[in-house]
Image (cartoon, rainbow, N blue to C red; front, side):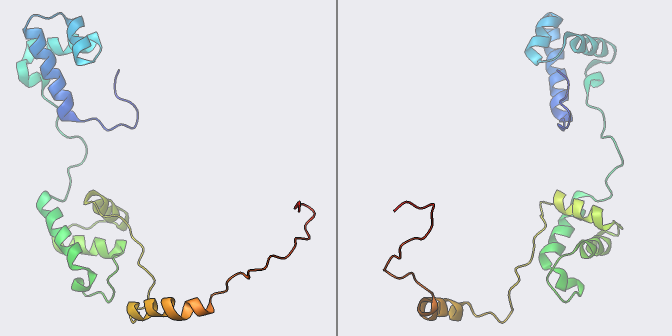
Length: 175
């Protein structure tokens, strides 16, 4: 059973599964039946039963988060979202394009945390932002004039096929 490779497991769901097994064991159910109902190996249920007997419910609680604690809090993430929505011009940049360097600069200004450009993109991804390419259009572009030109002038310039069909000289085409 275990955890498939590459699948992120949810610590809360695992804890709930252990507590459900403990509840079923407390009701007098056999370990093998508990294992079938919970969807784990019987040895796991046996191990949980021993932990529960030694430490009670607290022994089945989930382990604390592993790894280095995050430097940015939930409030920091909210500040970053507000800063991203204001745009890079609010930081003094001339264009409205967010680059990795500019995002790292925003994080350092808003939260006081220095991140590399690579990690700045990871933070953006965690916030739900994706990399976008700017549309290469002139600022002076007049959409109404373009649509008018397409309707009137382009139809006059566009080549259309003639009505007459010329015979094919291809040896592959049967007439």
